[in-house]
Length: 468
Image (tube, rainbow, N blue to C red):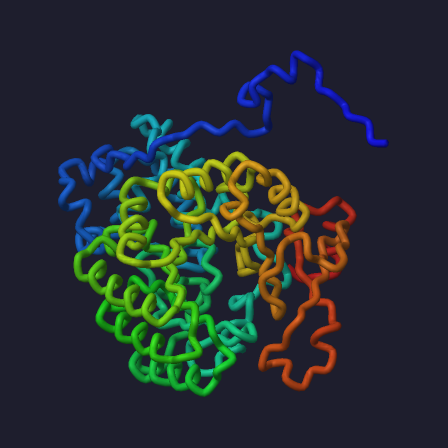
């Protein structure tokens, strides 16, 4: 017989909202930070701010332009730190929309020392505008870091079309974005070259590349899901993007189309342009008639970036017939690697902006990313910590994208050497690279924790067994 335990009277009568909890939810309405606090934008009108072309023209591309916006708010020590990173460490060139820059240090004092301190500590700044002092001084790169850490280009079936999963493909239509994130997983292809990285280039003309993609999908009926990405689809001229999407919708076996765009957060003005809204409605209606699920996947890493304009862009997409707007963030130390930061972001996305929290990826093993990356055990602890607060359908999964394996929930590892920070994973499908590999489904694939997270014994092992 099972005993029934009654709670003490003083607890039974206590409202649940008054119980002490690790995280306390408080609804917070979204706010657009005042861009006029920056001296260079003191006279910018709301009409200019909402204009997509103004946003693109006024992007910050170099230190000189950043100084012009900031006036005397930032001290020279910041610019020296930034310049050192740009020359020695950066894998992405500088390109920041006013919309993104405006979400950095939104409530900082406007005295130079205090503002500079707040700007250096700001979570959005830390991944959009990295400085050299951010980087890990001992192990800036893991010994197994790679430019194309997920080997996507190895799996191209035609230029720009990665067939990694049995039923899904990734279509890279363009190699540019409206803004460049410092941690970009496609840093080998996307954006301008930096002093450290000479970028690869797409060789085919866009029309020829798209023709080859459509032809492959027509010849490959096992593919039902197409992620249309880049770069960012917001950098594809709308008439070209709409034409490609309509051609995708003509492929009978394609049942899911996802548009990947960080611009929903970094340049929501783009997705609010009448020509884009009207075109998106035409695509969405066509998709609905043909029973195809059309979704937008965006990339927001911190609650500061969820503003009323972002919510308006997401709501507009839903109103014209897009089935879902979902967020795929990246888990990064110093940005969102606490339960409070993740939950604050998820509640803002879900509750205020109609954006579904979907995935948080562990930051990929690209060069100079060790200061951002978390160990698998840290990601597991975060997944545990955020459970039970959000609706189940809006509770994001934390994902480890294992090279040659693919996306795996962080608890799906087969084995884990915590001392050396090596986790082992298995897979349940073959890529074209493993067509004749009899051991592909039984092999264990390795993934590596940041060396800075290891015990002294593990750090010593790596120091002895690898060349930095």
